[in-house]
Image (cartoon, rainbow, N blue to C red):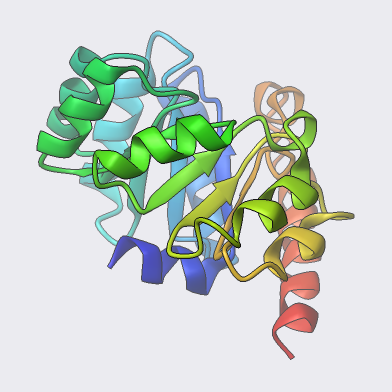
Length: 210
């Protein structure tokens, strides 16, 4: 279900939000351009409260908690109303907790060994991070041979200019987009700049799909 939603959307907006006042207008921007699956990173003190607010206010959104570093955060994300959780890497404890979690867990991996370890825990959909410095398209293409049953969400270093290179790969149904809502635009409440980013992305995705 989650993978199908992400496959349709193609780009997963990765957002860093400091306050609920930032969250509501940003959610409106995302919905305006039909981006309904969002990742809210747990990099700020209010991130869990923001996930809870968006969960209550916008039931049409599918919300992910990003930068999950431990089993406790995974549990807190589920309690806040997150539909899935994403980690930058994966310890044994986190992989075990992810396998038992009530919400979908997407473990972060960078090397073939890490990919295989997550696979042993049953995770067929993984986050490839940081994609730009971990081999990028070439690494994902190389892993598609021996690990053909796995899918990846590359994140880190993805941009409007190179997203097509990733999305054309058979093992990449979706890529993480950190450039859509830069922190400076969010802090300055420059929602128009974010709308322009989303509109341009939507245009490129329409071209990619045809």
